[in-house]
Every structure is written in C-alpha cells, then in structure tokens.
Image (cartoon, rainbow, N blue to C red):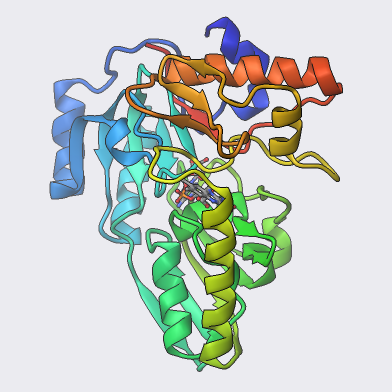
Length: 329
Ligand SMILES: Cc1cc2nc3c(=O)[nH]c(=O)nc-3n(C[C@H](O)[C@H](O)[C@H](O)COP(=O)(O)OP(=O)(O)OC[C@H]3O[C@@H](n4cnc5c(N)ncnc54)[C@H](O)[C@@H]3O)c2cc1C
C-alpha cells in the first residue's frame, strides 16, 4: 500500500476479498476452466475494470463474472469458497474507485440479475442488477410515489442498498421492506427486514460477506403528474449544481454532520486542484473527477491532499463515500 492509501484509513479501503498487493492473477488455467464451466458466457477473464466504473478507472479483474440467476450466483460463490478464490462484489460501478492493479480473484457483477415486478399493486420486487432508473420508471408507470429521490442517482439496486443511496428527497431506507442476500462461502440465502439492514446516511449494516440479490420496496399511490414534477425539479436542481459530461462518482466524500463536504473543500481552497487528469471539479468541489486518463493512484493522491488540507483549515476529517477496491499497480 502506498502513503496516500494509509491517509484514507483502513476501514474505508476494503471490499470483501480484496486481495493483497500482488497484481499477478491468482486464477490459474484449471481454475479458469472450472469457473467457465459454471458461469458459461457470464465470465470474462483479465477484464479492465475501467470499462465498468463511471470514473473510467481501474485495472483488470482476474475474472469478471455476471451470473444469470441467483442460483448460478450461489454456484459461483461456493466454487470460490472451495477453491479459496476471493470475491469482490460490484454493481453499477458508480461509487467505485478500483486501484490500478485491478481485482484479484473474482469481480462478481450483478448486472444480469434483472427481475423487476409489481406485487399487490404497491410493492416492487427487484433484483440487484436492475438500475435505479428502471425502478423509478416502473413506479411512475403505475402511479406509485416514494422513490422520487432516485431522480439522477445512477447505479444498481444492489449498490443502492449497500450505500443507502438517496438525495434530500429521501433514501432507500424509507421504502425498503426487506433485502435478500447470498452469503459468500456457503451460498445460502439470507433475508433481512428494514431494521436489520441498519440503513444510515450513505451506509448500511449489510455485511461485506454477502451479495445482495433481491429487495422489496413498499410504495404508495401518488398522481403521476406530482411524481413527474418532483423528479423534474430534482433533476433540474442537480443539473444546475453538478459537473456535466465528466467521468465521476458524484460526491467523493460524505457530508460531515451539519455541514457539506463541498463547502468545506471549496473554503479550503482546493477547487481546481489536480493530479494528472484527476481534478477537484471547479463546478462542485466534492466531485473529484477524471477529466481524461487519470489513474487510481492520481485520484488517491488528490483525495489525500484535499483531505489533509480540509483538516488543516477546518480541523474536520472527511470520510470517503466512494468505495476503494483492488490492488495497487
Ligand atoms: C453522476 C453521479 C451522481 C451520483 N449522485 C448520487 C446521489 O445523488 N446520491 C447517492 O446516494 N449517490 C450518488 N452517486 C453515487 C452512486 O450512484 C451510489 O452510491 C449508488 O448507489 C452506487 O450503486 P452501484 O450499483 O453503482 O454500486 P457500486 O458503485 O458498484 O458499488 C458500491 C458498493 O456496493 C457494493 N455492492 C454493489 N452491488 C452489490 C451487491 N449486489 N451486493 C453486495 N454489495 C454490492 C460494492 O462492493 C461497493 O462496496 C452518484 C454517482 C454518480 C456517478
């Protein structure tokens, strides 16, 4: 690990199964063959993770696996356990910073788990790989309110549950009835009700030793015009404040209690700071963006500099909202 990383604090650098700093693949030919037999066309080897992150940063995953069903996902999980292969779970990649050495073992992607159905008129059952936008569209189609907060929030339902994604209008905590996960290791299915998920500001207690596969959302009837108006207002507000057409994770740091990370960073004079193509956006200081060919190590250096400066000026330590995964180059 390099110095920048140590500044960030170990608790924020994990990712279940993120392996040690050996960039060489740990999947030999026989393991690859075995995995291909289980995952079929749902596996790609030595897959650049920059293709799967909105920051467009990240070295190769030894195996990028997209199970087609929760049952197949269970098989992959049991294979990994049997063979001692680490698993790192990825969703829409909209909150990930994958290091330049990539991910050892399996990057398990939920993108093929796309089940989405309306139950009993007001509840939505949704698999982890469905995009937040699709859930919002289904709710709108059936005149159901409660998830207007998702307007402009990218990513998958699985990642949204882990992060308790949301905006000033609300968050997943407000509408989630239960979440089902597959346990890494034995591949068993676990269901938790809302309270057991431990949702809090951009975080949850959903364990990193599980893969979220499905959830149920409880919505309420609301006139479509009202839903549309609220989502439109949210999108407008966002487009006025947020950088456009640039590779990013949205906000890099969580807001500290009673303040805003963007305000603190701007007041500390960091707007426009850069490390290579990694830039503290001149539009919104809490967006540390990739303006071209930034590497993860450049972005991590920028994160460390901004963080140190905010401590120096305000005496406040910012915590990452972005999840850092994988190995150094
Ligand atoms: C332009 C932009 C704007 C954004 N605006 C907002 C905003 O307004 N509000 C907000 O809350 N967020 C925002 N974000 C951040 C991001 O959209 C959310 O954090 C989102 O919920 C991440 O979902 P994802 O599927 O992309 O997860 P990923 O980024 O792929 O993963 C996030 C975390 O969840 C874990 N994970 C993902 N899927 C699963 C699963 N199925 N099971 C177990 N673990 C899993 C990963 O290991 C990782 O730790 C923004 C991002 C961008 C790029």
